[in-house]
Length: 269
Image (cartoon, rainbow, N blue to C red; front, side, top):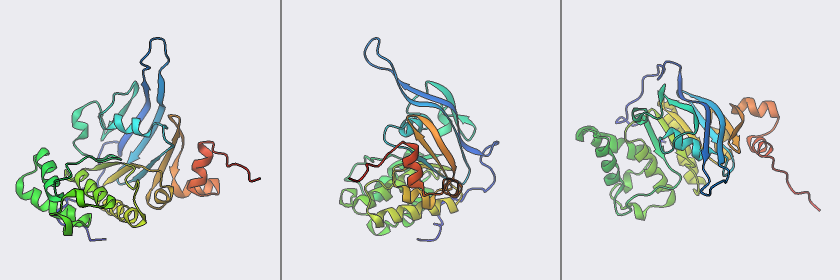
């Protein structure tokens, strides 16, 4: 990977909040009300408690429907919690200011495909009111980080899936956030694409940023995460450092995950 881009601002290694927690979730519950009268609500997240520390790469794992996306939506202000609380840098997520230091990459990115990577980053930079000279430098640095300098003038519609995912990462970083939230950042990528995204995440960590991401690629998670949380049916089942969990359960992260969700392989006849 390229060395740390000079246009990106490295963060002060001192704690980003008074508690040392970048993300703090307390007794979080999210319910979806049924549309019909008399029908019971669906519980997506149930009494969830977790903390993400500054500078961590934190893997948020679970099967489809486990409550990962609902939790992220609460953190991002897209959805209100039914009960409980969530804080980012000690600020309640219900306050808009809490999201000023966040970068977000959704699982499915929707961009104007006729734009070039450079035009896309300039568009988002203007939304954040980044001064022109600083924005020019930041765009150069980000395109170098995600290895798209050679394609900066090409329309995004001509990009491969991996290239589109990397320009999405650059967009999520345009405001130089302290916390990056990624929803399935390697979904649908080939091995080379996954490796490049993994290298970018590792570079971000070395620059002092905190990364919270969900993924079904457990091999990637085991390689790059400091700690992981596994949730199932809205409840936290396992949390800890990857090495500690592997040692405790005497098996790899994939087997731990399958045990948590109650998967039983079919016996061979």
